[in-house]
Length: 285
Ligand SMILES: Cc1cc2nc3c(=O)[nH]c(=O)nc-3n(C[C@H](O)[C@H](O)[C@H](O)COP(=O)(O)OP(=O)(O)OC[C@H]3O[C@@H](n4cnc5c(N)ncnc54)[C@H](O)[C@@H]3O)c2cc1C
Ligand SMILES: NC(=O)c1ccc[n+]([C@@H]2O[C@H](COP(=O)([O-])OP(=O)(O)OC[C@H]3O[C@@H](n4cnc5c(N)ncnc54)[C@H](OP(=O)(O)O)[C@@H]3O)[C@@H](O)[C@H]2O)c1
Image (cartoon, rainbow, N blue to C red; front, side, top):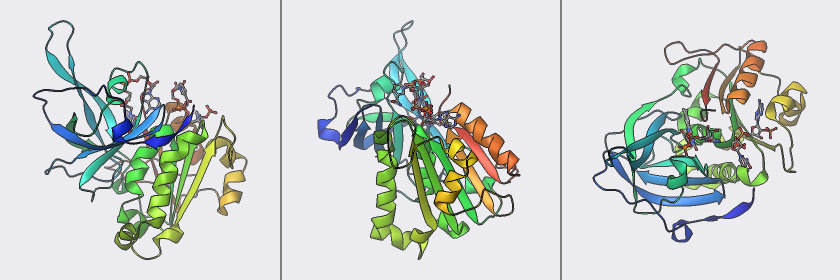
C-alpha cells in the first residue's frame, strides 16, 4: 500500500462513468483519493432525506444488463460519513480492483451523477444505546465511515463525558482519512461552535496499524486483551454501568470484539431495545 498525497478532482482519473435518465440521481461535488485503495467523495443531498448520524444507504451506478442490454442500477450499502446537519452527503470508499461497483465508482469526478436510494437504516445510532458516560467507537478499515458521521454530531458530545475512537488498519496510509477527520474536528472553529464548549477535551483518538510500523502497532483487540490500550488511554476496561460501544469492521473483528465486550458484561442493543453496545459490518466477507 502506498500512501498518496490526497488527490482532488482535477487529477482524478478521466474515465468517469456516464449515466442517462438515472433514478434517484445525485451530483458529485468533491472527490479525494487517500491511497490507491481508498477514496472519499461528496454528493448533493436530496431535500427530503432525513437520517440519523451512523446510518447507511444504498448507492450505486447504472450498469448494462448483459442479457437484455438495458441499463439497471447496481447498488451497494454505504455508511453516510457526513453528519445529519450537513447540506451534502459524504462517503468513504474502498476501491476493489475487480469489484462490480467500486472498479467504476473510483473513477467518479465532480459533476458526475450517482444513484442514492433515500432510505437510511442501521444500528450504529444513539437511539440503540442506553445513556452512559464513555462512548467507544471501534473501527477497522472503512468501518470508520459511520463514526465520521457520529463524531461530527453534537449529540455525541452532549450524551457522553468521553468519546474514544479506535481505528486499526494494515498500513499507515490507510489512517489518513481518519487523521484528517480528527484534525478537522479539533481545529475547525465553526464546528467547535456547533459542537458545544469543552467537546475537544472529550474526544480521544487511538489509531493503530498491524502491518506497517507506526506509533502504536497491533490489533485493538490484542491491545485491549493485554491491557496496553487501557494503560495508554488511562481508562479502565469497559463496564456496563458506564461504557457504551459501537463496532464497525470486518466480520472476524466484529465477532471477536463483540465476544470481548460480552465478557466485560456489556449486552448488545438494537433500535427497538437499546442496551450497551451495537455492531455493524463494514462490508460483506
Ligand atoms: C452495512 C454496510 C455498510 C457499508 N459501508 C461501506 C462504506 O461506507 N464504505 C465502503 O467502502 N464499503 C462499505 N460497504 C461495502 C460495500 O457495500 C461494497 O461491498 C463495496 O463498495 C465494494 O463493492 P463492489 O461491488 O466493488 O465489490 P463487492 O462485490 O461488494 O465486494 C467484493 C469484495 O471486496 C471486499 N470488500 C468490499 N467492501 C470492502 C470494504 N469496505 N473494505 C474492505 N474490503 C471490502 C470483500 O472481500 C468483498 O467480498 C458496506 C457494506 C455493508 C454491508
Ligand atoms: N490493506 C491492504 O493493503 C490490502 C491490499 C490488497 C488487498 N487487500 C484485501 O482487501 C480486503 C480488506 O482489507 P483491509 O485491509 O481493508 O481490511 P481487513 O482485512 O479487514 O483489515 C483491517 C484491519 O483489521 C485488522 N483485523 C482483521 N481481523 C481482525 C480481528 N479479528 N480482530 C482485530 N483486528 C482485526 C487487520 O489486522 P491484520 O493485519 O492483523 O489482519 C487490519 O489491521 C482483504 O480481503 C485483503 O486481502 C488489502
